[in-house]
Image 1 (cartoon, helix red, strand yellow):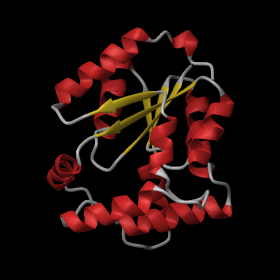
Image 2 (cartoon, helix red, strand yellow):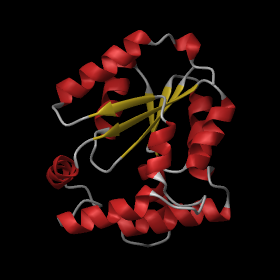
Image 3 (cartoon, rainbow, N blue to C red):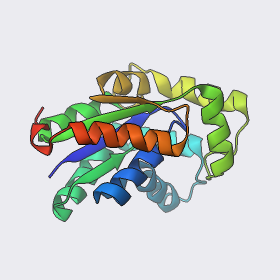
Length: 190
């Protein structure tokens, strides 16, 4: 069994990689976003990017920097199948998952304007923002000295495989397929 974590910038293609792993490789999908959204609803808050950040940071602060992904990891272990955890946002999550073994971290990035256009088209509850807000959100989540806060730059730096996704879904899928084809499941040790 292997656990793949997905990290990357907003709108870069994390979900596309997840779709590939689920549909082409039979992985189970565990979503940090869904986990946090459930908690936001439980708390009676509006589901948006600000609430996502506040609640995620609160859960980490009150439990551990890796609390959310540790919970999802346990669900994956119970399922006992290759799984993908989307979206890794703190170095503590990476450190914790690596200690558990058989973990691979994939990052994806793309040019900001392309990413903004993508999130504008997908129209999820956290994506109803203008371009300047998009850039501000990204700056807020890119680096932090707080172990409980998002630090995408560090997570991307820690990735085992890195994809740049300015192209089509098919082009990204080909990148992932090539990388997966070059990897042997047995080499995921850490």
